[in-house]
Image (cartoon, rainbow, N blue to C red; front, side, top):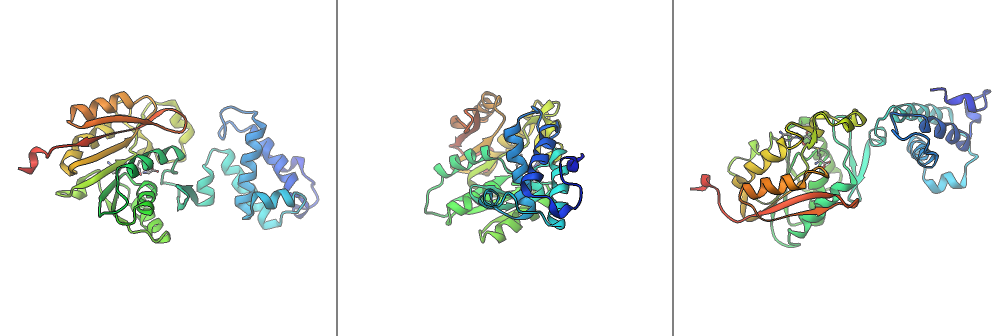
Length: 305
Ligand SMILES: C[S@@+](CC[C@H](N)C(=O)[O-])C[C@H]1O[C@@H](n2cnc3c(N)ncnc32)[C@H](O)[C@@H]1O
């Protein structure tokens, strides 16, 4: 990338925020890795602003007020380095080291899925099923940064919230986020339910990997861990595994709620019904796609006898 062609060549310290933004916007508009649909100057400018403000630790209001302020040498070096990483497609959240979810600031790092706004739909559905008072036991499977579990813990202070992930890094990050937010969370390394033998929960939530392994969209997500994104069997393998195992871990009338792909709702409903769940239904996300499907477990499993 030749960012400084459009900038004064005499000294880094004479580059203003506005000059840097103009060049950075052009760089991002041409970057296929950042944005498959190139040439969208408005979103490229917005993204360039986000990179700049994160790199120099200022607000949008500050940028609007001081567009002619000059970048220091250190600020320029950081802004350029972060722009190059963003132009290559790395999520802004990894550059900042944090991502907002459910208005909680969560630490994220390469190796941990960046929580998505659509996943707030799963949190909403869980909260509808968790009374504000009472020691309800909740489990978040595949917790990643802890996003879902911590949003629930934040809204339902009396709930006992558990979380699990197969990734030791995810468990460590989720625990760090819980401590940073002063929220109670019991987090374990676990292959789905393996670390919860004999345990039952009133609500189990999960946003498991659900993208088909040959889905071309995975290429645009190359900076995020593939094991957090893709699943065998057209993306349904992990959803099926959780649905099959959940009855052994649900209380009577407990709920299982699952996030899935926009075209997987019918398949997930069918899997839940086949497994014996009732009140099976799907909910749409903010984009209008069926995104969360869940059901109620009315019985006890054969293993209870
Ligand atoms: C789509 S990410 C969801 C992360 C987080 N819950 C969120 O919504 O941002 C899926 C998560 O499931 C975890 N995972 C994948 N396979 C797993 C398994 N067999 N057992 C437990 N966790 C698993 C991944 O490490 C990853 O953190």
